[in-house]
Length: 183
Image 1 (tube, rainbow, N blue to C red):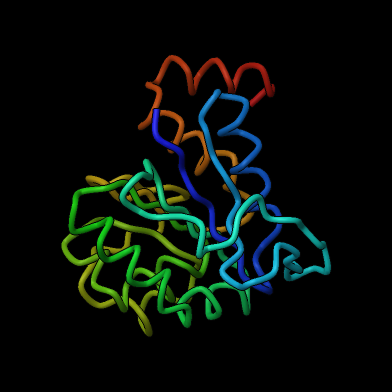
Image 2: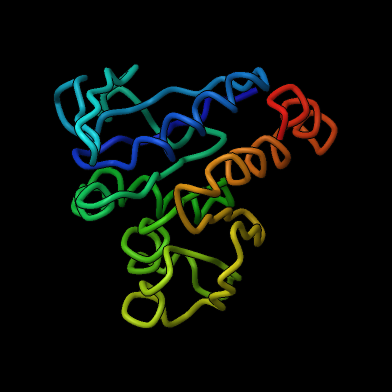
């Protein structure tokens, strides 16, 4: 199984990032947190410092299963401003690779790159009319459309992560992990 990468930028939403990492690891998926800066230490939107497993210079989309963008502000804006990450997302999408984003990131990171074009998607309420014009925004807690999984916010972090597990490892494994967590 290929490794998935979850990208951390200053101001990331801690629940979305850490719940996703935790649930994927419970499922046995290889996943690394990746700082988009040249520093392993990244501070979340609510002052939680996290040490990323890798730096963005150390990873490539070519060997990734999922590229994952948590939301949070200014985390999503910082992700969108990272040229290397944007290039990785575009290349991974063009190759049919799996991409997941939650909260502000579907609108702020993926939509401007054209990654949501023609897909059903969801994002943090209120972001849709400004940022997203070429996708069908459903307002659902989680949306899966082809190779894209999107979630709408922190309260749905578990459902978002379980959708990633389901796509990678199957519905039975996602159900097993959910059951073990009393979801």
